[in-house]
Length: 139
Image 1 (tube, rainbow, N blue to C red):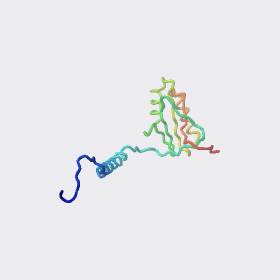
Image 2 (image 1 turned 45 degrees about the vertical axis):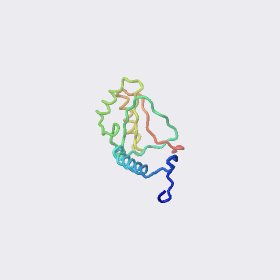
Image 3 (image 1 turned 90 degrees about the vertical axis):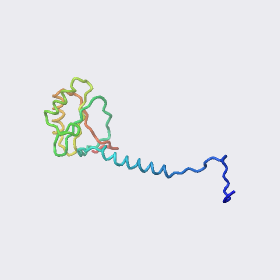
Image 4 (image 1 turned 135 degrees about the vertical axis):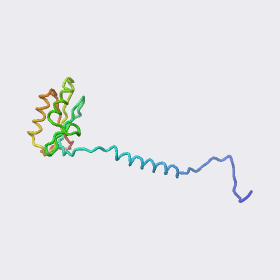
């Protein structure tokens, strides 16, 4: 026996080399970090009002936003009154259609009311106001 090492073929491998596992995990981490920068979309900053009560919206909904500067959006796209009317006309035959209105907390109440009225005049009778959940009422 050379060198005094006992080589017995009956024993299994009792050690695991974790270096390849660490290398693979680091590569996956880098891939996810790079991919996540493409997943994030640009959004319109809206400071939603807080409310203690609120529920889930179900069914088809149109997402309208009113930014702090008063600009109207459908989803994240700028919209005019004609765009809003056309969007409402597309879904007005669906009885479950709902207008989900997100307005910045600094937007005057009259502006939100005008949008609700305009949406209802164009055939969408149901609406909901988007809020940020809170533990207690803001009053």
